[in-house]
Image (cartoon, rainbow, N blue to C red; front, side, top):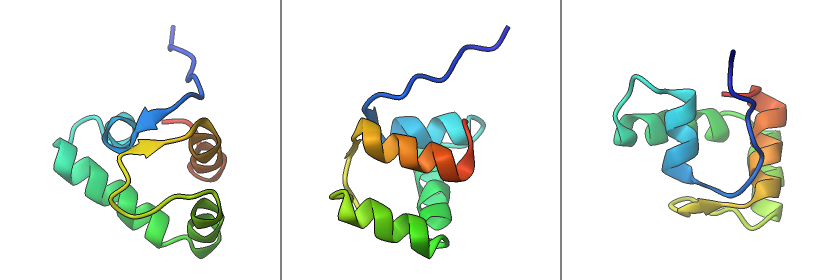
Length: 73
């Protein structure tokens, strides 16, 4: 049985590792960054919510938005 994904605050690296579990922390974070930068609408919405590159903590609302676009990790 799979664990249900919980929307809460996540560190950027923690969320990236959920999406890319077989990668290093650095590689997973870089890949999540590429996904976000490649989606202008998502990037714009996250920016309006206070997201900045190199930010270490994602709010529950930012996580929810990312999940809505990319699906659950």
